[in-house]
Image (cartoon, rainbow, N blue to C red; front, side):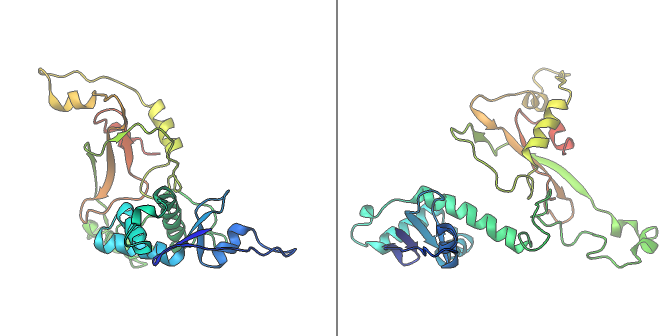
Length: 257
């Protein structure tokens, strides 16, 4: 088995426990601080320390996964890094899973009764906006009529039409389907199918806003992204971001499930 650490790629001989009450090979590696690169063929694994090291390098130095793995290959063989196995695809998959598990752990899921992930439970509301039971006094309703502006949440709806995504060859499964800022795909698609599709007519020749709303692009899976955000502090709302499928149809934001 090849074990990838921050110090390089190390070929190692691994003997798993064969006792009667032993854990699975996958769990045995996790107990040793090693994350398997596959659930079927345990031929490649990555240490927890290496995954945390990449996370810090990505946050502080903006190092992407390709550059970081090239550093690992260069560390393994400074003279001939191209001879080191290229496991960039496996590395990306493991990083994706690792960061998902860390977020789940930080939010308390997997411990006790917190096993089922609900809508937007992995994202946080704006910390400065009023939230009853969190940052408001128990008697806040007594002061609401006198100072309503202090207890009002103001939200903005906007979109980014430059965030396009091409049609993918393979289906990219979501680990946190609706658990973060993006809405759950199933209910969202049902809402789109139930929406009334009315083609708005322009009052003048080639009005840009209406033309963009009715425009469809070939080869694009997503034509943009829309979201609801706090108007005061620019913080996105949990379970409020949607993908546009055709032009700038703002109705898709209003149909949030």
